[in-house]
Image (cartoon, rainbow, N blue to C red; front, top):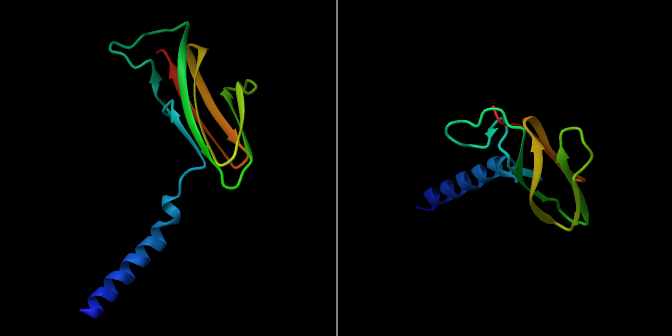
Length: 120
């Protein structure tokens, strides 16, 4: 019985060691928009859009602050900036023209970006 318990413990610790780094949380996590998606999501599709109010959401987790983050669309300057210690979450609405866009988030500990489309 001792050998079985020892073997199970050994296997569990080995799996945890192997899986640990692969399960690490992303430092910059864009929640919305979803990469490659077309918005707004309606049936039938909207066709060509001149512009739309669009919601974006993200979180940033950096160890041992203070830290800074900025975010925006396409090649334009940052729409917003924030200072935080370990973690921050941001959700905002911005009016965008129809077409393909790139939403980006840059923190001093990492960055992320997603492409999406407004209208068809």
